[in-house]
Length: 290
Image (tube, rainbow, N blue to C red; front, side, top):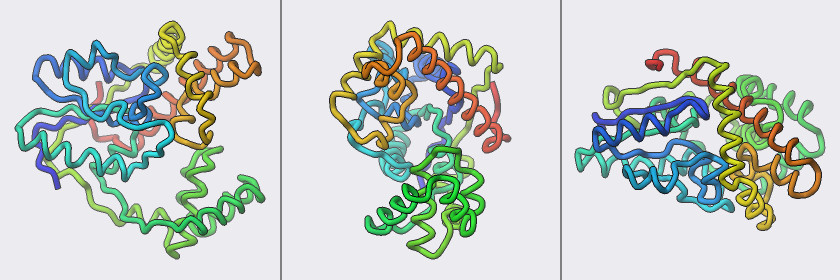
């Protein structure tokens, strides 16, 4: 386990001001800002994920931002394997760290643990995926509920990847994904970190979401989406599921007007922020709020 008494976890929904707060704190304390956002990992998504700008990165040291290609698929496990040695390195240098992001599963992995689930063979995953495609989500979800009712209830509608993952694990190991997750230990030493959740009033948060989408469009989000579309990547890749990617690519394909694409992106951003608010309220009730 890492020994990081100067580690602060800053969590919250998109557009809540996490990056701005972290930058202000880093400039006062000399802290290193470390990314805990699953989408800001991708180099191709600086604008669409509101990643810290080049100017902001020059004001304080930022790590694990833009380190992955959109063709890669980073899991929670891969992120923890990248972040833990980094936290150990910075702790050895006695440097304060601000771990900043909106991906709740990343924070859970650090503070509660990450299940050591055996790798699922490709043939098992492919067979389960074929079942999903044949049966459809409703029937598939009922099958999952028979072996892992907790996962079936928790996975949001339309999340094909997580549904397939849950049933694949159960099929391969004979043990539910929920049970694997429950049998874990935290990666961070208890008492070795402090935390903060940014939780704006919902109306203010939604207004910030709408404003951010407008700023993204002005900064070139459409060009960023076009660059992704031109690569013809698998739509199931995490980077291709970033808010705004699907909506803007649909506009580029002539399926919607620009006005519609912007409105849809704003709605998707608000929906995402709402889900994050709910997640942090349920999963981190004892963390201080701001």
